[in-house]
Image (cartoon, rainbow, N blue to C red; front, top):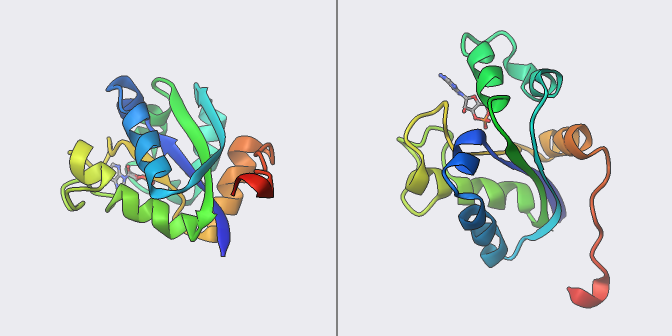
Length: 144
Ligand code: CMP
């Protein structure tokens, strides 16, 4: 099914100049960019985004990091977009992510793992609503 998924280039990816490389990989795969915003994340948004990790020992570190400098928040659309985006990103821990994936090629530690992507269609719907409040583009059928 055609899905949308939420993908974010984290502060480390933005600061290291990896936005173009990451966008390029998603485009070359065939996904379509339907929303993008370079933004400073508020503490409130960070805590809402990572609500499921609230009880984890690394939660405050997570919020601190994601609010430390701008991120590139995006919505990508296409057949099976949630799983496809996850395969392009590789495993959460860059030390275990296969070479050829974004984290496998550009990451080293689990805290600074370059990108975030929704882990299920349900998470994608929640995260897209949270970050974009329904403001995503629709491509005209004629360009597909
Ligand atoms: P992300 O996909 O953004 O979702 C939750 C994040 O928590 C994950 O990527 C990691 O960057 C981060 N994370 C997971 N485990 C740890 C850990 N042990 N220490 C610090 N950060 C972690």
